[in-house]
Image (cartoon, rainbow, N blue to C red; front, side, top):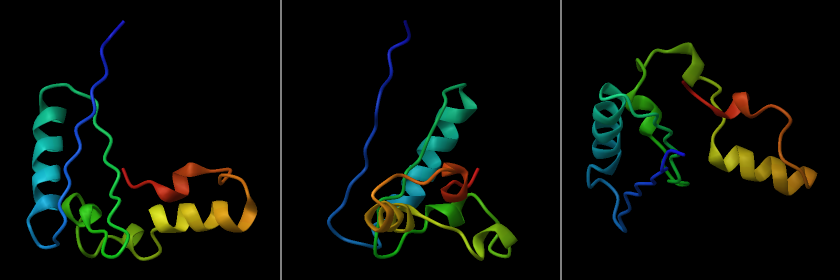
Length: 89
């Protein structure tokens, strides 16, 4: 059985380059054959999706994120039926 590992990057302060660091680490891991999943938990100003997409990408117009996912659960007392609405990839 393959060993699964989790890497977490965290910072108390914004504008420290955390999203860029995450994007770079994910890119390198993916390049070397690792499967990578990024969850941007910055609830005030999520931005990791901009590191992997063109700023004019139509998918970014109505993109749902972690806050939307939590809000759906809070309002409906269940998880969304289709998680694909909350993913970019």
